[in-house]
Image 1 (spheres, one colour):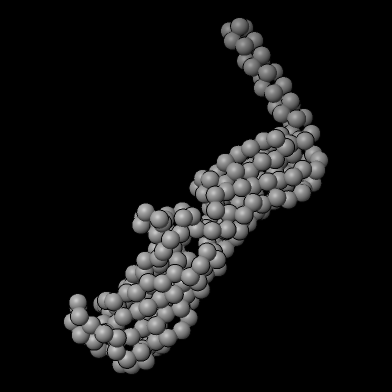
Image 2 (cartoon, one colour):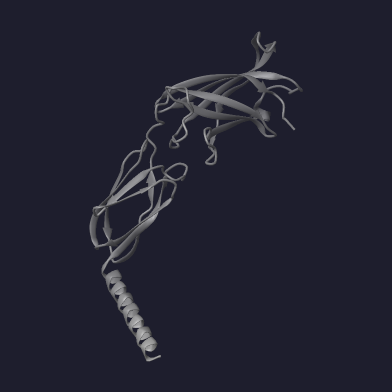
Length: 233
């Protein structure tokens, strides 16, 4: 019994000593934490590497980071990631908790060689999905959000499925893009509202849509020749 009590006392002493040491150490050092995301989409930045005070950490699908055990002082915080511009900032770290939120600016879409556009007839209008293709003709899955401009011209389709011509112009102009974080390939999407299409829409009418996507890496075109000109139920 006495031996058990002695054992408990020793354990308590060790725990108290460790806590005291930790608190003493924590009082001398600092923590730096924050979020690190795509500047436009606020999605996680794939494979971002951060360096501070000789310490390095890499994140894949996390929006946050944390450095601990930092001596207070002045440092250069650096972050790099594929297809993003490098981030660098001079910071002063104080004792305790410090917060630095980082917004990484996208630089390019890797190996971008073309676009493939799909359309879907919805209640609000014709939705466009833009997929990026690389030099192998495969879809690109990991890329930052960039400032892009989409223009389109929609025509009534005349003739058969294989032998057709462009008829009346139904729409011409810019198409507002939005970002779908949950999409695998087509994160950039747009919609042409039904009210912007210049004629009464009838069942089983189809259209031809020519699109032009302007990117920092050049302009890319595609044509969709089976656009449904009526809302699907």
